[in-house]
Length: 344
Image (cartoon, rainbow, N blue to C red):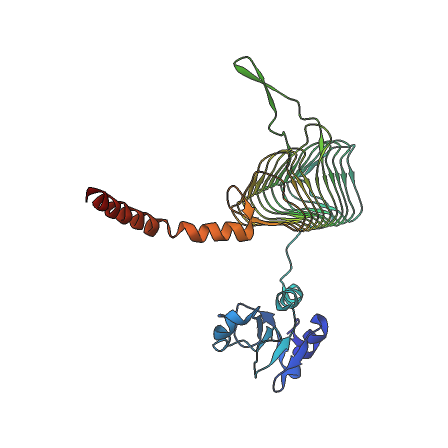
């Protein structure tokens, strides 16, 4: 096959120990899930809780952590998930991209700059004085506004909108339907009506950021909305005006950040988290799924719940909620006994 590797080669690639009878010569032609992988495929087990499923797998080899015993061909790695990601990248089928150059159906302003090796696909629009970096791909139906800069080696998938005066760094990936540069939600009361506050700031996306499908990132009222280097934003996330997200922060789906929220470095944000505006979340903090963040979170803090509390406190309260029905029943019984005693 054109793309096959021995387990020994994959062990070298991932920095894993090769174990099992005849393991080094086992040929791998692809990857698959634990319960579906068959001969020729490699799968993985991240921790001991999935050990029972391992016995039923038909995969030719498995990536496992050191604390799992397995007498068949395997790769042993302290971070099986990362090792599997490296192998999956090797076997991933190529994504079809348009060839370098400008497709005949695209509309590129005469003052725009499309650097060498860049591809502007079907029905894309590139505005005046916009810059499309070298080897960047606008797959199809992408809109790039006036004076916007897109760095090199980026991928913008179909129906991405990047409005005017926005700066995007190198190696940025933006998935379908994302909108960068819509106006922030800024209105000033004027009698019984609201006057629109012009949103005249910008957005800065630093290098190696990945933005999921249907994400919306509002331009700043003044200044900039910024996503730091290496941020990973899941689908359906709303990032309001003037939000600052520090480097290598990860944000799960359906999260919403209100205006001027500041997140530090390496923050982990679970799904459906919401923040009030003008909050600061410190470096390395963890915001558990569905948390409502109403006040600052200290560096390294872990919070959960709505309103969010320190994680241990929130889990203890959650456990107590489950006892409320029984507690109410016992109180009612005690009240009846008390009334009976008072009657005597």
